[in-house]
Length: 248
Length: 171
Image (cartoon, rainbow over all chains, first blue to last red; front, top):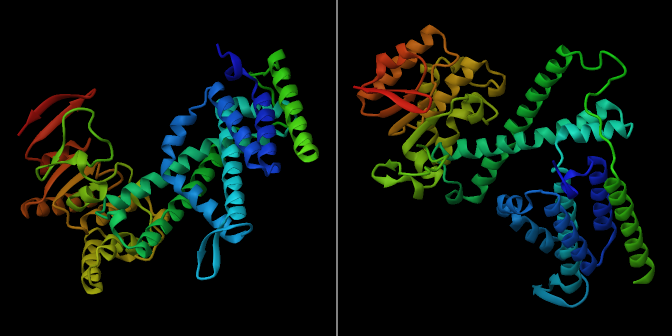
């Protein structure tokens, strides 16, 4: 039996995630964003997500975060100049501040989303349906969640297939490497289209939408802990935003 | 054997070197690998590009690429489909395309996972003849297949597996 945050109703987890993401999007201050990110990480681990395994898995794209911070810094210069290249303010204190804030914001959204991944997709659909969201839309959300790992696999397969033809990706020139990466798009898009067609056919054969009203074997029931999580996360978020916008 | 999965114990040696320390690209230069599901190794927007892709990146001249691609496309009865979108091909055509893309690189060793899936009798015979030719040229190969007749025509050594165990090993 799931206990603590792990056992929460997916709807309460969704509210929690929405609150964390809202704070991440609206707040600009790096210190507050760092605090929100820390809270998101603690809650994600407490909810039983494989956060650190995921970070390890995606460590290769961490350089992308650094690149985003630097690019953001270049395009919004302000304050003291840290790096000056031929009269162009390449990195400034203000720009770097905004870049770091952007990276923190993205991290908050991604880390908080891992909380949702601790519920299985069937529970998420049921939660949305019980929130009176049309089943078709809830089902679309669940399909999107379910298909994401398949798309990742598709990309991995292409990279493996390219390398197994004797292409050492780290040894070919950047221009050719870009061409190789452009090949990733085709199988991923065509694979998604083929799979969605097959899924649509399968659903039709199983009489999807044959009746306007569906009943469900699985019914979710909100417990006291769920209401507590919803109330506390909303209250803390509203308080944080009020404090941030009116007191700081 | 191809380095996609690393061995949990023991080691796989390719030309005397432990494959654990080799990159996939390095292994791919020596070993041609056909996936069990050919759709997983097809990615280019046309049949011709799928076959020529690796040769272009390896810096071969356009005449050499044209000659090798034409030859392998004709051998595998794909020449008339050279401008087709690979994702729209039938299962058997995809299988032949994946084999063509492997063979065009002229690897020193081949690992073919269920190469006859989706091929009709005539094309199985053609593939069998091609592999026999390669064998005579000194190209080694490991073929994983449920098609006993196909294996019997080719193999010098047959290892039969059941439930993850070797139940027969004969030459």
